Image 1 (cartoon, rainbow, N blue to C red):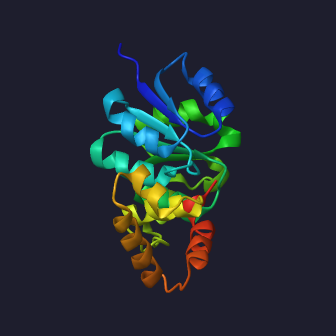
Image 2: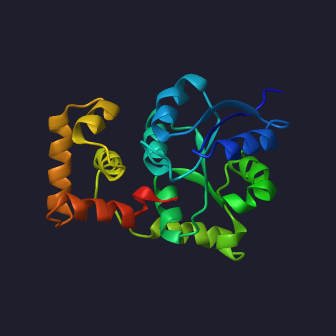
Length: 212
């Protein structure tokens, strides 16, 4: 029987190795990545069934990467493995196409089970967050209003600026012109009613764009 193809993405290399060792007896790990941008670029060619990814990653965070991946790989199952137990963050993940959400300190006991569940078509949320209310918890998550009024491209630009990249560097990473990055930056400042680059960065740091 064909083994399930899995991609792992996390910027903690030791954790990546540990997860790979945990999964390989049952699944085929076809790729590992340390940032969201590399993941988005390589995943379509690897034809994964499941992608296990962190939320807080450099260059492109897991939420933005997941949103991009669902556009090109609509059938892929996304399982977020994060340190963050914020329900708003989990809600955002499910709104953007996640099938599973669990926290890193329970990965050893839950991840294999979570993968089996999402492959069967179910959703999975760590019991640490649900308190025995799986079905209604996920429905409530999906109904929560998104904290973001920004587009996906704006969120990608904002993360890079918040990481300290110049507009020129951000343009190179995203393969757009510096003028396009500047346009997104000033549009965001207007939308968010902030007057300076520093305030814009503060917004990014407070929001789930830079989540761990």
